[in-house]
Length: 119
Image 1 (cartoon, rainbow, N blue to C red):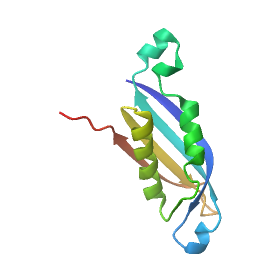
Image 2 (image 1 turned 180 degrees about the horizontal axis):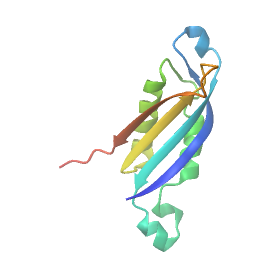
Image 3 (image 1 turned 30 degrees about the horizontal axis):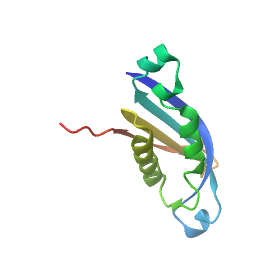
Image 4 (image 1 turned 90 degrees about the vertical axis):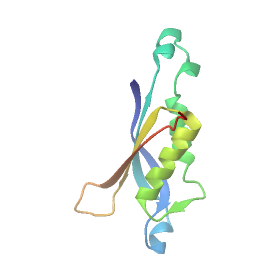
């Protein structure tokens, strides 16, 4: 198994428990790790044989358009579900970093999911 990572992609989403916190988009950092088999791409040198990380990043940048979340936990799960459905990695890990506490570098949540395979 191989891995493709996007580390600390800066996005702006409407997120926060109080209504007033969600009135403006907040800066978040997303880290996404996608496990996949890219041996075919290593031989063909073709983008069609792997996960296009640029396409994933563009989708992540637009994911928050017209949406809002109270909890970054829900956001992380929604992101993982979207990545699994649209880009088809074997598994995905999503970390969402938020900056609500001035005395802390960040607060983060991490979720990991595997693609369901029928038996």
